[in-house]
Length: 159
Image (tube, rainbow, N blue to C red; front, side):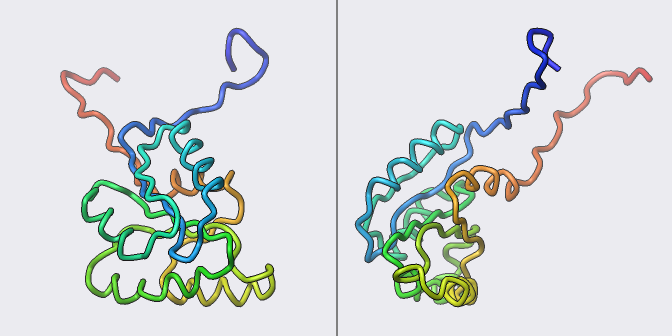
């Protein structure tokens, strides 16, 4: 409890230096959600490499090659064509590229129909996580991050 309020103070993880690559799938030009998600991730402490809209999967792989410290690739798709846009994912992964978690968010199926089928097909392509609500993105990224090692103890320990 905080000494100044009667409510518990939430723990805020240290995300300094944590980098993600963000973009919108190749056939999708929806820029507003992309910009809002980038702003939110930056507010939450992430370094964001934002590739923008209409980004082919190979460009996500190139961005990861150029930013090897990135911990995840985040792909948005609001037009329901993510499956078609991510067809090269197995090939890129087999070539040793895109070897970090790939998180997909947005509308998974045209008209919202067949979402469960689309979800299974996308996971079958190699999508690691599917996020339906932008509020779930930062907690997901935090859950994927291995715990940071404690600082080494120097000097004698007193018990």
